[in-house]
Image (cartoon, rainbow, N blue to C red):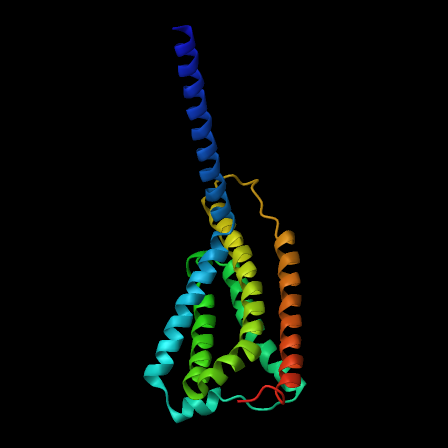
Length: 215
């Protein structure tokens, strides 16, 4: 009888340990999702924009649109200025939304727009150049968009955090509560440098590969 009772308690302890382990795993997954939630949302909204962009090109393709999307040979300086102006404008918009109380709910419009434009460009290459267009996109489009989107994803994460902090401050009645902007500014400056480097890399490699990778 004592052996049966001992076995019963051992089994109960085993199941309790197993349940605790399962709960811990669920908690870890939940914490991981919470930590990278904004980055996951960025990827989802970008994917949505990508789909809408490719569908839009198929429905609204015109000679004028094709002429705008067709790549042309440019100098490194012109490519850099063009890329930097586009990338940095979107980056500044994300930063601006971080300092707005309404920034948090609408900030994911940015990756949607990036996905939309990328989808239109990718659909143009695939529709007009088939397999060759896919190869061109993989070499001349995907790497730079991936770099830019990564920087934007982390910038969105930072801006989302800042916007939430500002919302919390408006709800907090404690006059002694303060928000330190210094850590945010430091990270924004690092991301701005990454945007500059990405623009420079794209300009240099695009100019170098333009004569090799053709469509």
